[in-house]
Length: 51
Image (cartoon, rainbow, N blue to C red; front, top):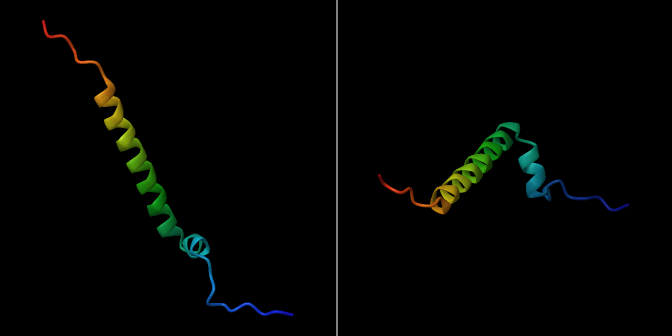
């Protein structure tokens, strides 16, 4: 049988092994997503007519 070396741990597995890093990554992704979405919506708004 072939034995795999323990040093060959995939990057995604390393991320899943650290729950706090995964939490921070999730918060950052949502923060960036909603911030960019909000900025996009602001720029797409029509200019308000002044009285």
